[in-house]
Length: 501
Image: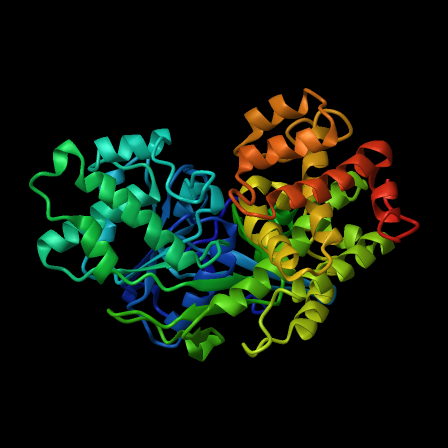
C-alpha cells in the first residue's frame, strides 16, 4: 500500500468511512493545542471537527508537540488527517478527522509556536500535556528548581515548557495590544483551570523578578487579572494504538494511515463558560457548558480515574493485561464496586450528579472487549495521578469518619506494582517521574510502614495533613498482605474470596 491518507485520497474513501464534510481550505486557525497525543485527537479535535462541519470555520486547530516529533511526522504527510476508530463489542465505525490544520514541534522551532500563540486569530489555547508536565513540586506549587523551568526563566524567547510558552506569548500579546487568549486545561488535575492559573502566576512572578525583565510590563499581574482559565472535565477512554490497529484501519481505508486513534463510543466534556474572546458553539455538539465544573470533575476523577488506577495496579499484580480482562475477574469486579461506594460518599448530594447511573455506565465501558485498554498504559505516572484520584477521597473519608479500606488498597497496589517491575513484571513495564528515587527506596526492602512513609515523603501524598499518619498505616496493612501472598490475601482481608494471584 503506497498511497497515504490525505486531502486527495480522502475524496475516494469507502462510503462507510465518514470523511470531513467541509472544505478544509476555508478553515482558519482559532485554537492552539499543546500536547497533540491520542487523547486530544479522540476528544477535543473530534468535537471541533463537528463544529467545522457545521460552518464554524474560524476554529481550526494548530497542534503543538512539546517534546516528540512523532505525531507531526505521522500526520504531516497526511495533511493532518487521521482516522478515529470508535469501537465497541458491536463493531467499529471509522471517522476521518480534519480539524488539525497544521502541526508544530516545539523543540525544533519554538519561534513558530510563539508565532501561532501570538496570532490574533488564536483565541483559545487548550492543553493535554499529562499531569507530570505541569511540573509541580511535592507540595503542589511550581517546581521552580526543575531544569526546564530554570531554562525558561533564563531564556524566555526559546521556552521548553507550557509555562514558558504561555507566559511569553501573553507577554507579547500584551505588548502588541492584543487581547489575551483563553487557556483551557483539559488534563486530569483537580480544578485544572485554577491549578494552571496559579502555576502560571507563580512562573510569571519569578520571571518578573528576573534580571532580564526590567523593560517588561509585569506579566504576573496581567495573567492574574485579565486571562481566563476555565476548568473543564474530559472523559473518553483512548487505548494506545498498536501496529495491528494501523494495519487493520489502513486496510479498511484502502490507503495508509500512519497513526489512527482507537476509542469508545462514550465521550463527555464539561466546561466552565468563561471565554471573553469567544468560543465555538460546543453545546450544539454535546458539550455541557456550566458555571462550576468541580462536581463533575470530582465524580470523574474519583469514580472513573480512581477505579482505572485500581484496576490497573491490581490487574497487573493479578496477571491481567487489559482493563476488560481485569474487570471480568470476579474479585476485582467486587473490589471496584466497593471502591465506588467509598468514593461516592465524598461527592456532594446537591450538585445534580447521579453517581449510581455513572458507575453503571462505567461498568459497561470497562467491559468493552474491543478496546483492549492495557493496564500498563493506565499504570504510568501513578505518583502524579493518585493524589486527585485516590488520596483526596481517602482524606475526606478519614475526616468524615467513613470506611476507606478499598481506597487505601489502591495506593498499596501501586507501591507493590512498582516493586514488582523487573521481578514478576517486566522491567520498565510502566513508568513514573519518581522512578529513580522510588526504585532506590523499594530496593531496600524496608518494613511496610517504613516503605509507605518513604513513598509518601517522595510523592508528597497528604503532605502536612492531620490524617497523614493514619493513611500511611492503613496503606501499610495492605502492603503487608500484598507482600505475603499477593492479591489473594489482600482481597481475602476485605472479605473478597476467589481472587487474584
